[in-house]
Image 1 (cartoon, helix red, strand yellow):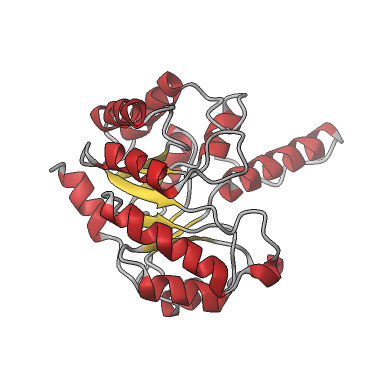
Image 2: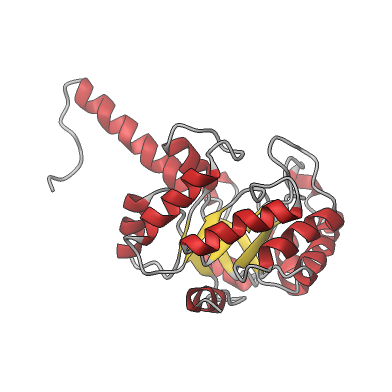
Length: 259
């Protein structure tokens, strides 16, 4: 087994969550590594947008892997990449795409249970085959479950929790190493999922100002094993860059310190 896969897997501890501050290229990976990260993870939205593409597998797989290889030149940390829906129509094609990522050096991947451009979730049986094909490469598969996507906050209760847990059990049986459950901040639901899931749970950070969380400890108490930040770091960096450029073009001094 790849030692970085083992190392990455060991960082997923319920109640002591791994913090992943998602990056999008080698430069951002270098900055986050230097800040004290224990692992590196890309977010597909920021990766695609930073290169002039759209999310939803619009960024070609060859380019995804070239970006991964550049990231690995600047960090020795385990690197997990967001492979969206696996870059393949069939389980065999997913397996081939993920195998290429492993050869390029990925320790982990994210794999969504929604095909690009689709609102409906892939059926449990079909998604389990896709996960199995990915997991057979030996990589850490963080299986994303989009059951909460597009659902009103008042519906984030026991019925959706059971849908998530049904998929968690199936995905675990198929070889997934982790369960990624975005799009909810419902504390009771997160706690229930973490308690019953057979694999460690990843929750995406949502700021308190948006109804999210106050700090890492709050999610740790719920049993979360991994906290990621999705596209927000990229979006914040681009917003700062735009604001700073606007200041300069308006004749004002930039706010950054000289380097």
